[in-house]
Length: 189
Ligand SMILES: [Fe+2]
Ligand SMILES: [Fe+2]
Image (cartoon, rainbow, N blue to C red; front, side, top):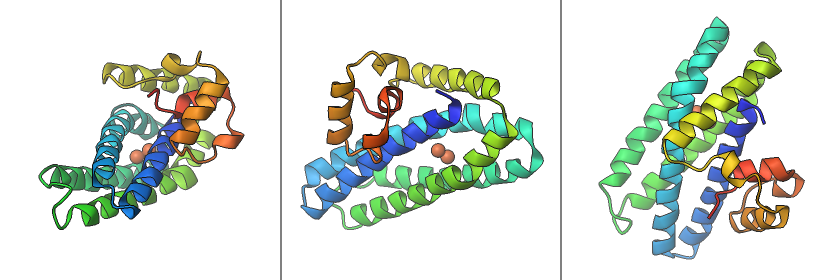
């Protein structure tokens, strides 16, 4: 699996959490909503770190025009971090908690869509298969160092188990994913 596919897997894992948060929020299940927001924040922390420390610098090495999109990406990460920090000082019962979660979700959705529609395809075109594989190894190593689950931890799980996790975790596009994509995308628990 190449670097871009791994990052998209992270995005889809977060999209699943966002969908589940939406349901918990709708049904006013505050405990569940708070747990899901904590998971979203943990996922974003790891994902933003591996992008900023491994992926974005790799893009900077490639081409100047793509670098501009990276600078915008870094600023969008910054906005997410500010919102996450502010959320940390609020309780889920506070008046502005849900509003702030909504703004965080909307800004993350905008950012990941931009990465998937613009940055990633341009990076793929400017890169090559070998480099994308090397970069995948670096992303996974960084993720492991941060204590987060990596593809290798999940790749040997039976497909039926991965499918069940993907269903429970509301992973978008799960029905058309192969074993490797499922393993990269699901959270192991
Ligand atoms: Fe990003
Ligand atoms: Fe991303």
